[in-house]
Image 1 (cartoon, rainbow, N blue to C red):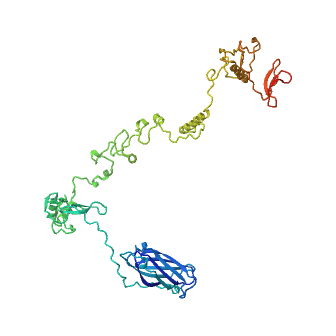
Image 2 (image 1 turned 135 degrees about the vertical axis):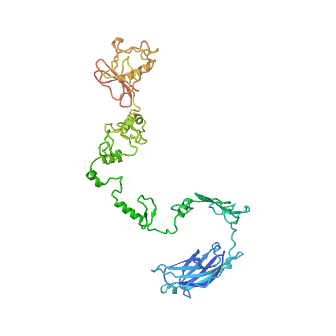
Image 3 (image 1 turned 90 degrees about the vertical axis):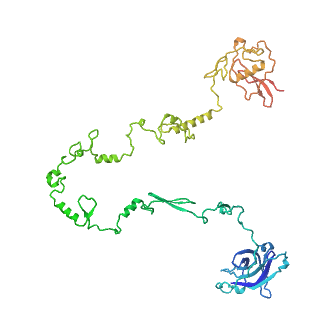
Amino acid sequence: MTTRFPTTTHTAGTTYSRAGLYKLPAGTWSAAATVKTAGGTLVQALAVNLSELGSPDVDGNTHALSLLATAAETATWPLQQLLCDIIFTDASVTPVKVPAVTVAINVSAHTVPLSDADNPLQTISGDMAPVLRGETGPAGADSTVPGPAGATGAAGADGQGVPTGGTTGQVLAKASGTDYDTAWVAQTGGGGGATNLAYTASPTGGTVTSDTGTDATLPLADGTNAGLMTPAQHTKLAGISGTNTGDQDLGGYSPTSHNHTGIYDPAGTAASAVSAHEGAADPHPGYVLESALGSAAAANTTDFAPAAHVGAGASAHANAIAAGAAGFMSGTDKSKLDGIDSGAQVNPTDTDGLSEGSTNLYHTAARVLGQVLTGLSTAAGTVVTSAHTVLQAIGFLQKQVSDNATAITGKQATLVSGTNIKTINSNSLLGSGDLTVSAVDVELSPPTVGLGITNAQEGFELIEAFLNSFEIGIDAAIGGKLDLAGGTLTGPLEMVEVGTAPAAPGANTVSIYAEDNGSGKTRLMARFATGAPVQIAIEP
């Protein structure tokens, strides 16, 4: 049910504000307000504030409602009577109760700026309690009284109009499918001027000529379409009596003779001729009657057949023989012939007689060697067996080669004596077993002799390197000592502490070494074949 309040007025472009007090029963109420045209078109949703009074006022009102639309918003309102619908909703009951209030607003324009004082706050109020009593009644009939006419709207912009240009006799036509895309063109067709037509006849057709347009050819009639009649058709039609209408009964007509010349005579003449023909003893002298032949009519003989019709195989046509006499085709041969495609050739006995196609190509060595290894996989290095394809085998072998190349990267090349490994006294270090090193006379002073030693320090370093890998014996032939060949050892002889004292040497031998005395002091020790090691000197 809708409660309609008196009509109010408002000036477009100014603030629209309304306030009202309403009697609402207990509940959880909310409100919404919209401005619409009389036809129901939405114009704007208004800002709404619904608040409950602390207690009913003297008139029993329980709620206060305010509506607001800014001046900028009302500036867009149409200048006509609008309807402001206020919808109250109670969410505390089921079904939800929705009473409504409608306020009519006459919107008018103004020509000078107005302040909000020109639109003072208007107050509306109403008792909503009656709205909530009972079910909603049926919709009322539409009003038959039209609303007031709205103000005349502003003049619209000028239309596209007719473009300038063109000459006498031209008309405006569309140049494309785009709106307003037009052009001046020469007028064709339509009224204006006279056209002279003429007709030219011929035995095969007719032509209508025009002095302003395209000539038209009239075709001859056929079994489907109407058209002109040829002279021959006209002659044939002229020879037909006008009494020949529909199908004719020719039972009363017969030929004048039995040779069927096509000329008809009155009824009865042909019938008597036929009777005479049938009663003649031999009406066809050129033919032999079957009754006269007797059993000979069924005999297998060539006596009664044209000579050209007698086959070479005797009285009847015999079947053709391969590489022999010609004759009839048997049913078996006919079925075989029907199964052979047109243009078929004798089956070749080898591929030399068979042309290569464009899809199924011959398998040649050149094509195999030039084939791209599509689908090659080098993921596995499986040992190749006879069960693998060529493509698989290539992938397995490539994997093995790649893995081996990775495995030997950075490895020592093959040792070649005298090339990438030195020799000792011209003896190769390669092979198995011990290497015998003969005693040599080493001169430790310049010039370089023997092993290329330039000073005593290098000599001792070389000896130390040898001692790490070999046992070097001092030959008695040179006095059981290192012969310095008259040189003088000017540099120090340095020894490094050993972690563990050496074992006792052999008889008649002493080992000289340096070690830690256990307190951080270096001491020089000598150890003989027997007895404990002897301290020679100690670090001060």
